[in-house]
Length: 246
Image (cartoon, rainbow, N blue to C red; front, side):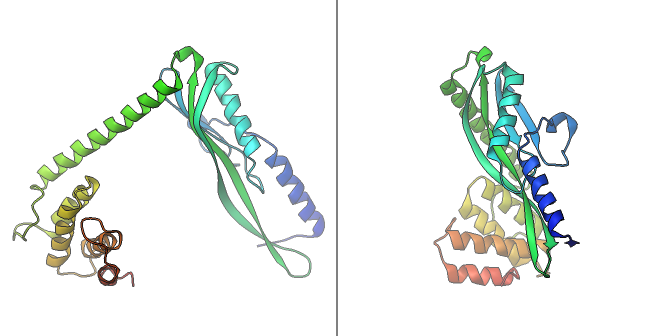
């Protein structure tokens, strides 16, 4: 907590105005974090196609204009001045820490800092790539990532002995059933995942263990949202209670 007088308050406000009016030229990828939070970071997805994120320096309000300035400055560096097209670019404001300040008369105010952010995609003219083609590439990239993830989880299930959780086997631990359930849930095979979560908590003797609590919580979530089962809030609450959440 900081005690300041009215003059200090005005100086602090003025400093906020100055910082809020500044865009940032800090390269977060090569130079690390910036004390004021501002800067830019890009990822080249293919020659001339970038995912770009730009943040303003901290300010007492989210200064989207400063974030946009940082974006355009970096885009010009990557592609040449105004030699690019952007798409799916959206603003957001990141709330930073709130500093409690005691003002004359014993009152207290909280001054919150923000980092406005602009994030989206950038296509350089030199790439000779239309926005439609760029979006198609991104969709295919996402599908490829999903396919590779599914293959990893299928391989994981093989290493865990398969996806059969119809009945408990003496040689299989609650940890194995829990890991099977998590892989099946990621693969969106919710009915099989539910059966594995059920066995994981059923055979776990220690009701304070991680696998017991997490399995009960997962079953509660599935009943609450209707994944692999009919929605049933009463049953969901019962599982949440077993997980120690209620």
